[in-house]
Image 1 (tube, one colour):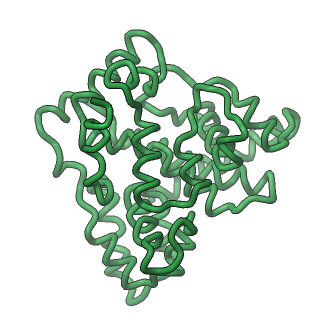
Image 2 (cartoon, one colour):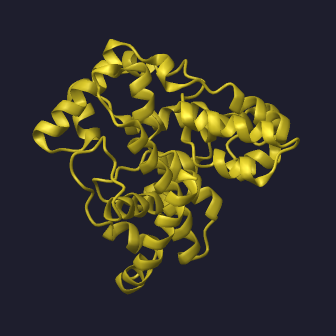
Length: 283
């Protein structure tokens, strides 16, 4: 039964985005004659668009399969015309709406804002810590919730029951998914990332669970995304598909060699940066 459910996701070539996100990018691509930083900057805040670009860049035909881990790397490889073509084909999430998905009653802008903030904070924490690829960390944070969006599209009935159980029992959505259907959104994300030939480090990060202890098998990217998730919650940008806040990421901080003193010292800067990110995304 588990494999049957997971097989549903094999046909996905990408995920849909919010209409406002698509319109914003299309307007920007029409405004300029060639690719400029503004377009990349907008795309990098939309998980489905970033995923589709990463998927294309990691195709074996380009010769960099399992090597491209950030939108910036992918954009440099693919070029402006291919990038515009990919973005133009991203469907709107509303296209998939029916009675099953409507009863999920989800706050989609809030879901997107959490993912955007995870990406932004992962990149900034990587910059503060040093020694990490900032763009790759940004991407890892941005796309971590891939499995949740995929479940909205392919298995809304399972997601509905998992959300209900998670709320009733105050447990993580990943655990609720396992109890309801024998798999979680984390497993879905990992399987999709493997199918799309993503780098192994990115796959590990997408499979990292934020409600369990981050270990060395999750890698530095997994630790960064864990800390970014916790910080997003702490700064007022929670994952609205979870009903309990994540625990303090002590193991992730230790794995990255970040002291509690440094972490506390960074928080005011991270708060200011989060506010600046919101201003950018709303203007």
